Length: 452
Image: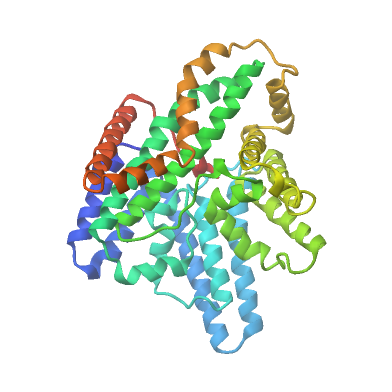
C-alpha cells in the first residue's frame, strides 16, 4: 500500500485515525502497530516476514548486548554489537546488490534501506550509551510505523520514543497534519507523476535532440524532488494525525547556494545518519585536511552505494564529493564573492548533471545523454512537442520549488489573520479534489525512492 493509492486516503487512513483517537490510551500502541503491520502486508506477506525477522533479530541482539554490558563482559558485548551491524548490512547488501546477481526469485522488501538504517542507528545509539533496552512493542512500532516505513524519513529511536509516552493529539496538530498530507499528495500526483511523461519520452529516446535531452533532465530534476518531498510531506502529515512530529526531510534544496548547502536541505535525515554514524566516528574534520577529505570520500561512496548497485550511483556520489571538497578548500575564499543568484543557479545545474548519472543505467549512457544535451551525438528524436506541452508544468514546478508560496502564505496570514484559515482550508480542499481526480484517471505510479 502507498499513500497515493485511493484506498489509503479514502479508507485506511480515516479508519486508523478514528480508531486511534476514540479508543482508550492504553490500547493506542497496539492499534497503531496492527495498522502498521496491515500497511506492510498489503503489498506482500514476504515483506512482513522479512521485517518481523529483522525486528526479532535486532531486539535479541540488543537484549544480549545489554546483558553482557551489565555483567561487565564488554569485549563480548562489542562482538555482539558488530555481529548485529554486520548482519544488518549483510541483509541489506543481499537484497539490494547480490539478490539479482544470483538470479534469486526473492522479492526485495519495500523500504529495506530505510528500516535497516533505522535499526543500525538504534544499535549504534545503544552501543554508545544513548539508548537503553526498550519494551519490545515500542521497538516493533518504531521499526514498522507506517508513515515512515516506505521511504523515511530516517528517525532516531530516542526521537520516536519520547513521543510514545504522551501520544497527544491536538486540534492544531490535526489541522497541520491534514494540510501537510494534502500538499504532499498534490506534489506527487499533480506534479511528479505528470512530469514522468516528458522524462520517459526523453530517457527512452534512442537519439534525443538537445532540446528533448534538456527537457528530460529538467523533468527528472523536478520529478524526483516533488516525488520524494511529496512523500515526506505526507509522512510528516500522517505522523501529526497520530500525535508524532517526524523530522523534516527537505527545505527548498533547489535554492541552495552550494552543493554543501544542497545536502543540508535534501534528504536531511539520510545526511544526518551518515554524519552522525559514519563521518563523525571516522574523525570528521578533527584530524587534518587530508583525513577530512578521506572521510568525505568514504561518506559519499557509501551514499552512492546506498542508493543502488550500479556504477552510475558511485559516480553520482563521487560527483557530489568533488564539489563539496572543492567548496571546502580551493573555492572556499572565492564563493563568498560570487553573487548569491549566480551561486544558486550554478548549484542547480551541478545537481542536475548529477541526476543524469542517477537515472542512467550505465556510465556510458549518462555521458551520451549529457553529450546530447550539448548537441554532441544528438539525434532527431522529436522534442519540440513534448517539451512545449510540458513547459507550463515545468514553470509551475520551478515556482513551487522555491519558497515563494511560503512567503505569500505568510503575507496573507499577517494581513488577513481571520480570513487566512478559511483560504488555506479552501486551497487544501481544491488540491485534494484535483489529486483524487488525477488518481482516478491515471495509472498507478510508485514512489521513486521506495526502490532505494
